[in-house]
Amino acid sequence: MSETRYKRIILKISGEALAGADGLGISPLTLKTVADQVKDIRDLGVEIGMVVGGGNLWRGAVGSSMGMDRATADHMGMLATVMNALALQDALEQKEVPTRVLSAIEMRQIAELYIRRRAIRHMEKGRVVIFAAGTGNPFFSTDTAAALRAAEIEAEVILMAKMVDGVYDDDPRRNPAARKFDRLTYFDILNRGLGVMDSTAASLCMDNNIPLIVFDLNQAGNILRVVQGNMIGTFVGRD
Image 1 (cartoon, helix red, strand yellow):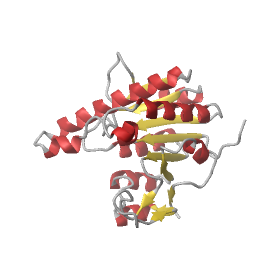
Image 2 (image 1 turned 90 degrees about the vertical axis):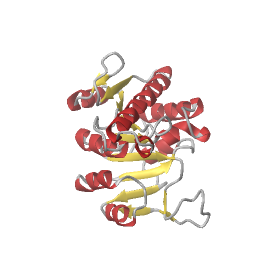
Image 3 (image 1 turned 30 degrees about the horizontal axis):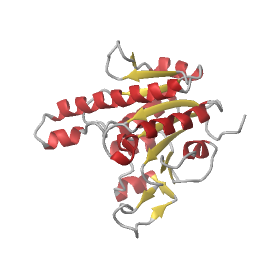
Image 4 (image 1 turned 135 degrees about the horizontal axis):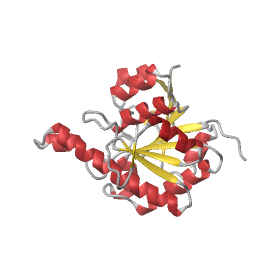
């Protein structure tokens, strides 16, 4: 068995990343790529919790900007994350990876209700746990859900799989001169407004000393490289 740096992780995948090159919907190729990589690290004995966004299907902020009640729009976004979680579960189970979807909103026919001890027990038994429906509350992002779940299950790190290879001082897709950061502190994220995650999530990570690694999901094998301790992407921590 290969040595890994982390034994229990939260893997945060944005809805945008799940959409792949299409930008909307769910990309079957991206699902397969994620499932292959998650299987690789699970086979090494890593305990895996996943938090998935829903922006590829619906964004609460967009609905709110159209005049929709914000709580209603955010609840729709939570349902979008459940759809993505079920797609990921199916992709993983096709690879014979035992998987459980735990939802912050009760929907017994398709997912288990999130209970902290249940989630930990599933991971200890080698099951990949996908946390769906965010925190179950409007006005909180799935980044905050990732930080909260990481604190609750005592994850060692949050791996943030993005469409870019790290954190930049500007959008590298629009500005070729944008500068990439190798390391940042939580205060850098909060003070510079770099868009890694919202301030609530960043503060929660800082208060609980949970490091983040932001990296490119599109590069095959990157999840394994990060878990094995290779320095890719951008590391965010206390120092």
